[in-house]
Length: 217
Image 1 (cartoon, rainbow, N blue to C red):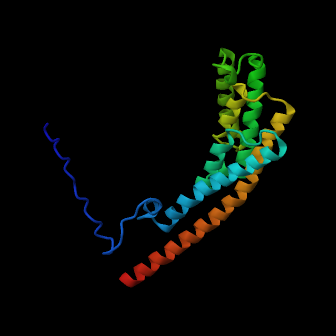
Image 2: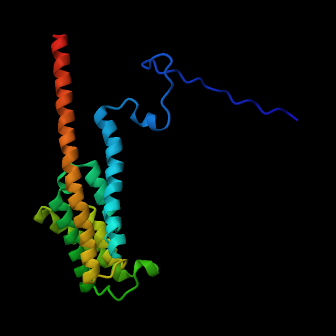
Image 3: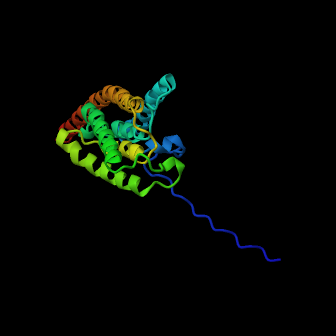
C-alpha cells in the first residue's frame, strides 16, 4: 500500500508591526485588532443596543400577551443601533413610518378583498394577498417621504398584515404600534447617547491630529 503524499504547510509570516513576544490576536480580540477606537466601540454598541431594543419589545409581549415584538422591530432596532445619525432612525420617522405602513396594509387588504383568502401561515399566500403586499409596500414608500417619516423597515410591518400573519383588529394594531413606540422611545435615548459619544470621539481625534501637526511643524 502506497503512503499518501503529505500536504505541504505554508508558514504564515508574523506581523512586523506587532511587538516581539506578543501572541497573535484570536477569537474576540481579532475583531478589534487594527481598528480605531470609534470602530471598536461600534463593534460592541451595535449588537448590544440591537439586542436591548428587541428585549424591550419582548418584555412587553410577555407582560401583555400581545404582539409588541414582531418581525418589523428587528430591522428597526439594528438601524437605530448602527446609524444613529441617519434621519430614518429618528423617533418621528420610526413611529410614523410604521403607522403609515400599518394603515396602507390594512387598506390594501380591504380594497383587494384579501382578508378572507389564505394567509402565509396556512400555506402559500393567495394571489390577492400578493397583490395586496405589492400595493401596500408601494404606497407606503410613496407616502412616507411626504410626511418626513421614511423608514424602510416599516415595509416588513406592511407585509405581516397583507400576508395574513396578523389579523388587523384594534388589539393587534395597538400592540404593534405599542411595540414600535416602546422601541422608538428607548432607541431615541440610546441614539442621543451614542451621538454625544461620537462627537466626543471626533473632538478627541481632531485634537490629536492638531497636536501631531504642531509637532511636525
